[in-house]
Amino acid sequence: MKVVLTLGLLVLVSLWSSDVQAMMGGMNLTEQDKFPYDAAVGGGAKTPAQIAVDEIRALGATHVILNPRATMNNPKGNDLVPVTPISDRSAERGRYKRLIDYIHSQGMTVGIRPIFFVVAPDGSFPYLEPLPNGGTKLWWHGNIEPSDPNQWFESFRSYLDIYLLIAKINHVEEFTLGAELYSMTVGIEDQWLAYPYGFPGRWLDLLHYAKKKIDATTRVMYDINFTDDIVNATGVSASGGELERWRYRIVDLANPRNPEEHQIWQDLVSFWNELDAVGIDMYRSLAGTHDIIPTNSPDLVRLLRVRADQFASQMDNTMVNIELVTGKHQLAMFKELGYRSMVKGFIDPFYYENGAGVYSGAHQAAAYEAMFQSFWTPKFDWFGGGSFWDVGVSPNRNSGSGDTGFSPIGKLETVDVLKEIFGFKY
Image (cartoon, rainbow, N blue to C red; front, side, top):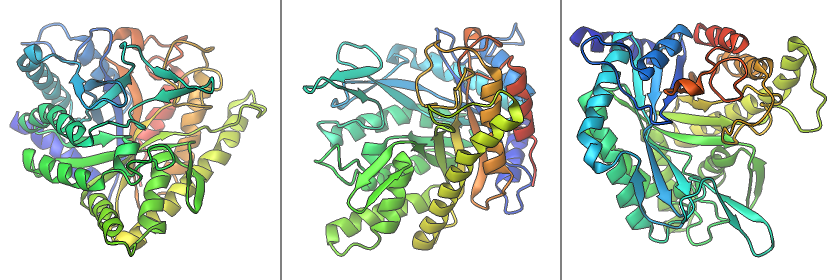
């Protein structure tokens, strides 16, 4: 085990030293259909999770992100309910240990990234609330409005505690404190008027808490979404979702005179600066619904590059401008980057996988190739590579050609591009 951990740490050090030779290349591994994270005991037949890890390794990836899950019943509720019941908690720790040991034995590093899903009061998902004007509102983890934010943070910390312990026991290399919690970090003032600035001070407290709970060598991150959502606030109207709001809060509203607002701003800056790296959940459309889509791959990649280059430029400007204000040369990486293998899957990529659409491995591969050319090859000094969404533990999620989901497994065009990305070196 000591040798295994040493290999994992060597991979980590090589990826994050000042003279980086290779960018982080990883895949998110997700549970579903009652297929849990686990590995065989005593060299028995490999579990579906081990087989999925082998498939990830065959792509050339060096990092696997595990995504524990919880639900939030009602977007205005105050409690998270872990998918794993408390009666199964000890057994879950054992399953995680076996799988993490197996991933480490393959010379790969591990991240743990607790996430949650918002469900309607009747338990249905996704939650589309009918509005008085006849429209609907999609509630998700990025726009929640807990009625008692203090209780929500207590519940959220209790949820994190489960996996902070697993991270410590297994000496994992990365822990994600939260992902895409837009309304709770920087606020959505045009939607949640009661808390227009979010709760950056609470996140700073959580960061300090988490760092005391895990190994000093574990990289602690928060993941910011980067989407097509338009941010509308005083003096700003731009696409980019949560990332654009972070930029606006830190840069455009720097050093406010009001003491209360200054403390909120300082807490956000401190949170940004004290994170070991920033994750980006990248779901941006690479084409419009009215665009004429080329039928050959080179022309299609060129079309998709137009917007991919715009997004790379936006991120570059954002990272540099934040650095000018905060003084921190922060590293960013994609923690989720996903396009489904379906015709025009590069449009509205943020939709949940539902089996719909017409299969196209070529369109998925072209989207990844465009992103590779726009983000990896320019060698931005703030960019550390990233991890893709996703490979499933369930074999049903990795069914190859014909499957319209996110998984690249068995999709030859996409596999070739991912091997190119994972093999990229400075």
